[in-house]
Image 1 (cartoon, rainbow, N blue to C red):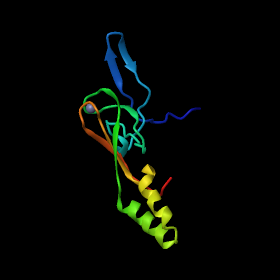
Image 2: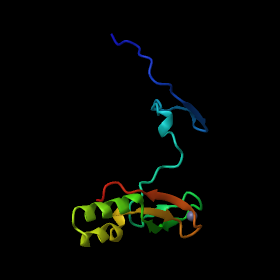
Image 3: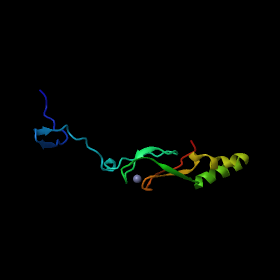
Image 4: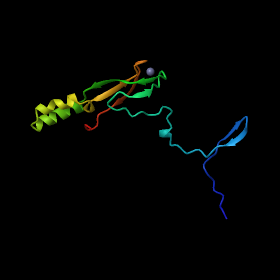
Length: 117
Ligand SMILES: [Zn+2]
């Protein structure tokens, strides 16, 4: 004998074809129920749909040095590699990268530096 289990709530949609019972909705935690899909921005320009103007764009990027960039440079100097100390400034992966929409110039997001990759 199969016990009648009470599952997740179902939503019933009434269309011209008659009522249709949908598959039980997955319970989504509130934190992830965001309308705008988060984009993982990398250190390079990337193709995406601008959430501001809706255009399919390739982001324009601006890199900027951060305290981490300087920290790496100082660390390399302390390690005795003075010539290497300019490397963090040459590597985009050691900087913050801001992504902008070339169409509407909206700020779309930022790639923050973790440890240099
Ligand atoms: Zn845009």
